[in-house]
Image 1 (cartoon, rainbow, N blue to C red):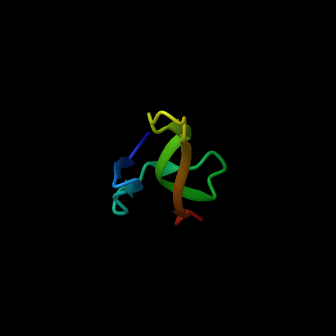
Image 2 (image 1 turned 90 degrees about the vertical axis):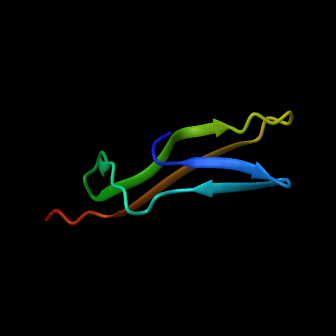
Length: 62
């Protein structure tokens, strides 16, 4: 995971992403990555729940 923090509070998944950070361009170059779980992530709960997240913005490069 990059620029993603999560926790479980009272049976709710709380995800935190710093929107001011940039990780660089996506593979296609069309967007700029802000945060990613790099695929699905297991929450570590007994029921095996997983989540996947990508946060991105349009690329400023022309």
